[in-house]
Length: 111
Image (cartoon, rainbow, N blue to C red; front, side):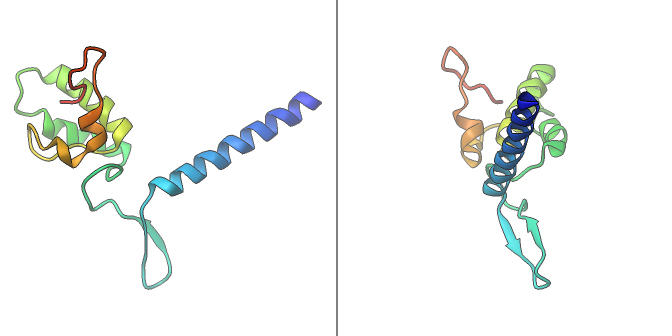
């Protein structure tokens, strides 16, 4: 009985933390009607939804001869950073998380 109560408290705490974290990451703007929406029109960290990552990575990796590894790492980076730089190469300054994630050897993780 005590374990069940602790489990319920733990789940509620995790839910509250995830909701608070989501609100911190989301840039909210107010419409005239008083509704809120996520401002995802801007580029940069958090500007994408995870469902948009495959399309953005397809664009990013479309001109490389190493398409499969580019897609794998781009999607991994996009899922973490919620951002993919514009263009096919470079422009990583638009996404600091994407730019600063390094491999164990210190090289860039994200294409």
